[in-house]
Image 1 (cartoon, helix red, strand yellow):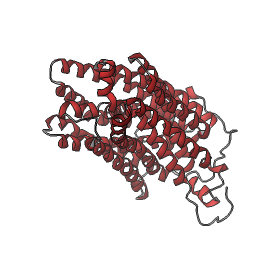
Image 2 (tube, rainbow, N blue to C red):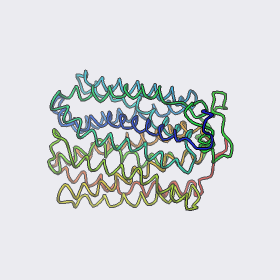
Image 3 (cartoon, one colour):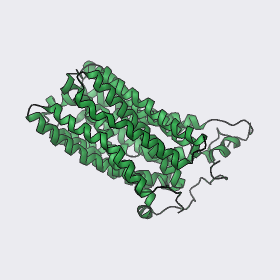
Image 4 (cartoon, rainbow, N blue to C red):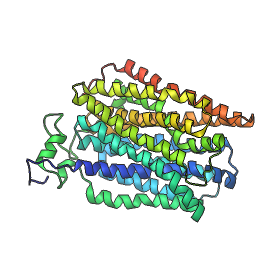
Length: 433
């Protein structure tokens, strides 16, 4: 730590959040590319809706497996090395999409992308736990989680332009290469607080103000047995919340472009304002959700109650999406979907933060990995359902009716998840390992 200027607190933790923000932006940019290229690739490789569903499932299956592996790996070897490995794998996989010659090949590279990208959130949530007190964690999580939204906003603008000028292969190469640029900054600017030269004693004490004394951040800390976490009820709170709600976000990422194209004849070969507006709204939701629970805590509400109250509000905000079936023009649909997508990101900022609220830092990445795996399992099941529904109604000449069924499922998912989470842990007590 920097011994100088001990009384005036440094604010280096916000530089760390900036690093997480750009990593998450690149993460979501890379995974979003295929959804925007879907119409082009369908013609190139003669894909059916089921083929695309299987490709998405390959990503989700590998993502689920990777979350378990990376969660424990990051807890053991630390965020600096763990994040680096994750980013190298996913960036290479993203670029390899450009040389694929078959539908099966796309399944393989999507699986590799899922494996690499699975390290992002276990690492990022652990970094937030290392660098922020509980009263600031939801806001910090909401800020870096905006990267998911910015990546999703940038993709509908950036990818069609690259497609038109250079072709679909370069869309994968250019977006994949961005990760290696970020990696340079990561190694220059990041280290855990106890070993970082850019923070002073005042900021170090602020970071650890929840626990009264600073935890020792070194490799001699006691390791938590990974299997032990499955026997803890609070782990299952996070698992349930992710299982029922993550698939909805994957639907927003992978099928919204196709929905707007098939229902409202949106031209995906050009920059897309409707998609950009939807994902811009999620930025507001991500920051607003984190800020809301932090504001409730500052007003005196207990931490767990503030998180749970905020997530209930988010769940209620998703319900109106069922009315998308009655939308008579694209902008009505954009408004309803934007509200639901923003609510998801607000939900996400808070549900991720519950892990660092309930578990010690040394177990955070493992718990995030377990819950993230559950979300990916849901993400495997839901795309299969989506592909079957859309293929059935497409054959019948009414694909819009298929999307109506899917929007109804989206409307119910968050309230159902919140209720189960509340029943599992009404008070969400702190876990002592």
